Length: 107
Image (cartoon, rainbow, N blue to C red; front, side, top):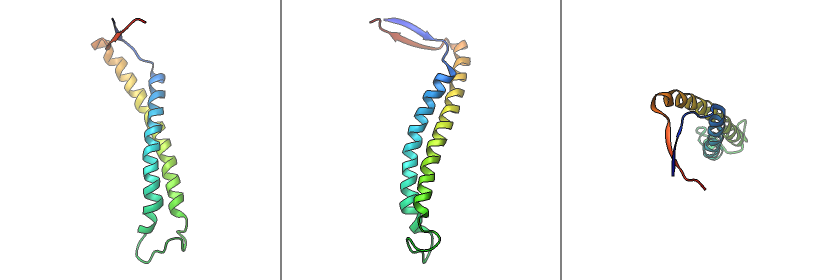
């Protein structure tokens, strides 16, 4: 096994991968928010509220879809920014520490 050190990582590469992971997390949390907002949030509007009657009719589904879309967007943007910052910090720190050490096996 050959030992190699990772001296530097590509900022855009790490940021893109982190954005994809953020989209997956955003989808998971967006689905949870969709369920809570779409099905639970509307009946909790207040006393005397009747499901499907009045100006709030259909509002739960709309808010749920908005929560799902916002979860995806926030996950992508937050993941990209967080990944870029992490890569920049790693590149700066690896100058002092030598970077991650990997054991690689030749095929």
